Structure formats: C-alpha cells, structure tokens
Image (cartoon, rainbow, N blue to C red):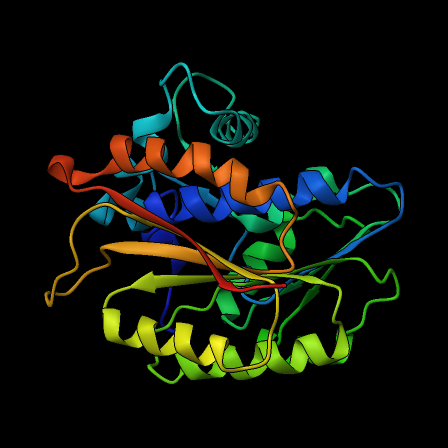
Length: 280
C-alpha cells in the first residue's frame, strides 16, 4: 500500500533474516563468472537512517541489528551480514541501515544487473538517489509483481527475484502465490526469495498450502520467531520461502537460525523453522 513506509521497521529481526538469506544467495551467484540479474519487486528507499523519526518511533532495530552489532563469535552467515552493514557506518555507532538494493549493489560485477521497483512517490525519489546513477541498476516507478513479469526471463538466464510486499492488504498472500507461478513459468531456473510476516498464522498456513498445491518444485522455508503467536496486533515471526535455493542455503540456516532465535527471542521465546515445503 502507498501508506506503508519500511523506515518504521528498518533493521528489525525480520530484516536480519531476510538480508542474511539475500546475502547467501548473492554469494552463490557470484561464484560463477557468468553474469546474473537481480529483480527486487518492493525495493523501498534503499537507505535508512536509524536516528530518524520513522526509525525511532518504535525502535524496532534495537531487537534486530542493534542487538547483534557488538556480538562476537558470530555464525559465518551473520558475520557476513554484519560486515556489510558496517560498510555503511563510518564509526562504531549504528546510525545507517542498508536496504536490499544497497546490500545487493556491492555484489554486482561489470555485467550484472539490478532492477528495482518502488511505487511510493517519495521513496522512489530516495531510492533513485541512493543508487547514485549506477549504470548496472535501473529503477522502475511501477508495481513490482506486475511489472517484473515482463522482465522475465532476463537475458542473463541467471538470477534472483526478491519479493517483499507489505502484506497490508490480505489479498497479498494470494497474489504472491499467483505471481510466483507466473514468474516460474517464464524463468524456471531462477531463484525466488519471498519474504512473509507472521501476524495471523492462519494466513500463512493458507500461503504455504497454496505453494504446495501450485506445482512449484524445490521450495524451502526458513522462519525466525521472537515470541509465541498471538491474536494481538504485531508481528511475532517472519520467514523466507525460497524457490530453487543454493544447495548450501539450508546448511547455512541450520547454523544461523538457532543462534538468532536465542539472541533475538523475547524472554526465551525465540523459535525457528527450517522445512522443505516441496521437494525438487
């Protein structure tokens, strides 16, 4: 929705999981010399100031990146994530948080591409400034789920589609499944990473079942929760559903998610899931 601003939630526990998974996928893509294309359907403004009014309203980053910032003995995937965020902070103090576009940008080589979508009229301007006229990056003021269908398959025939809607509209849960089916029909060998929140577990069960029934193959799920599910307002967990994941991703998450659940869980109620939703 156009009222949604990710700045309220930047750097929270959901971002920790989402961006850790994103980094592991990107690390896998750059192992081969062949170019790749990354498409981000809901890019946001790209860069977040954690001392802004938006970020300070709920201070969600404090139980996310903030809690990990000075930790030692990190699992390797978390260490890689923290090192990237540190590149955007000139001092030991955590004041900036990079969104998915700026996390992806350093992985781009000369012939790789990043295609970004953002519909919010203010955030599209901030996003355009954040990527600094990088010729490898193109910004679209479009609805990402619809527009990216016309970009598939990419000419590189390798790549990732990152899908991160706000889910402010209940129909988004059905829409992402329908969109994934259409995307995979056009670009079957691509990797797809779908982020989801847990605010009403029933919706997520319907989403998971829809994906199981869709005909999609090779689908894995990685979920991090910081407290028990509740009927009250608020996100208790979030996850990533990955189609055609790197073969190393499940192992990376096996060492990462238990550690995150322990570090970020509230009053010992942290939990996680690692599941194969659909076999290859």
